[in-house]
Length: 494
Image (cartoon, rainbow, N blue to C red; front, side, top):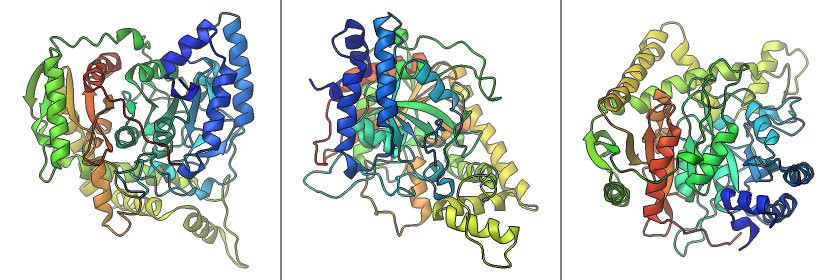
């Protein structure tokens, strides 16, 4: 078996047994990254940093200091600030920005011995569902549909992370999820991705999109790997006022795969008009798998689900409009060249027009509109009230004995890059239809690969759990993973 085919758990065990080294693992993955330029997943390469971290990890392991992530090669989404390394959030406006500080999550991972291979491509400021809004260009899904050689989307905004893990360029990757940006690309590329409970992981040093929705999480090739990775990156951070001061469980130890007696909810509102038959069939197969594993299946109602997408696309742009106001050409990043006579207003206008792409501009304008005088109550305040109702729907079903909720992860498998170029933006936003409720309610959600469509493309199902119970959620996910037996991987063409 190639070193790039290992899981995090397998690599950890080999490292501890002295059967390989962190440096050997790192070199194998750096070689894989070097040969995968066609995917455009890695945008800032940090090979020398990786080798230095790998040597340090090997020394720790020799001393018997062996954290779970020690020596594990990972990729880092470009949204995370990494000291001395370009951190652009996929945007031209942050061109040249190299922070003098480390995000809390990457600091935790590096302290645990993880090895950073480089920074990963993403939709600009995490705004997108196809990784086509990045200043670095499109990321290409390593999967191909049937005999077609058309390039497919890896999903977004964590498309670079998804593609890198799926193509075996790294053992795991950091992603972020504001409305499905971990779970949707995970489903499109045949990997596992978990969005933890809001507040489980620090947001300090992660470039903000929508502060009440953003949450970082791991993207891996198995549920066990996700549990290992999540433990290393979780925990209270006094620098983040939204970080929860709660102990971090040993998520891996909670993975028994035993779901007997668990009650799994199936929400009728997620069975939508026009749902592709393959998605509906996959969902039913997932229900049957969990029932066969000993879980009780109960049909439930989440009545305010139909309002989730419009609610999200009021709240998220509003928060984005506020967060992105700081990018003005004054303090850091791109500044437009000015003409004689231009003042500060012209500098702001030209800088933001040049620095922000069309999708970011669209969302800033929508957000500014819904926050403006005369429209705040009609749009933003009303959306906040509906968000409370959506959250209460989940609280009610969990209080009624539901342990986890099973839904589709996406309304389709991966589509071709450019397919939505001339479509109404709302068509693209519909990719988030099954995922945004989880962010609005602040709940944990995980996407697990469970099948393939008729063209051989991966499809995933989503499990939604109770707040702060990621371990129990991942245990159900592991049961689903074991019964689905998804072992397919993309054939190398890049």
